[in-house]
Amino acid sequence: MLREEAVRGCRGCGDQYRVTERQIERALAAFGSEPERLVPDDVYESRLAACRACEKLADGVTCMACGCIVRVAAKLREKSCPLPGGGRWTQV
Ligand code: SF4
Figure 1 (cartoon, protein in one colour):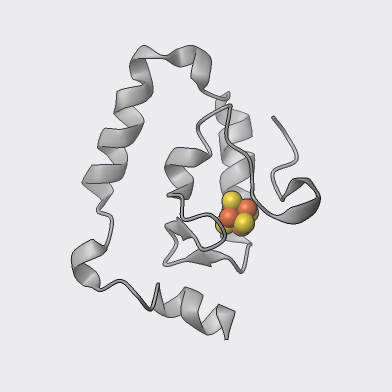
Figure 2 (figure 1 turned 135 degrees about the vertical axis):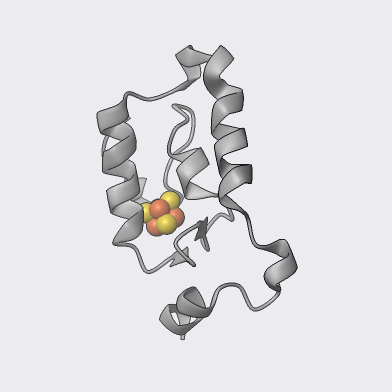
């Protein structure tokens, strides 16, 4: 059931709430003035790889466990994967 929802996206949201590539790029660009908050590129890619393999990722964009936009959250040092037991992001 969850896997099916992940493929279709969130049941409660229609296309009007779909996050655009431009919005994601704008959010990422906003962190440019705070580099101390960002993880290195290799950590970022490792986190995104974990998300891409995760059944909680909906539409390739949103984490169904916490509601975050993973391409934005994975860039931030203070964020973590919400799954129990430390989550799927193994690096800080
Ligand atoms: S943040 Fe964690 S639970 Fe969410 S999609 Fe990524 S790996 Fe899955």
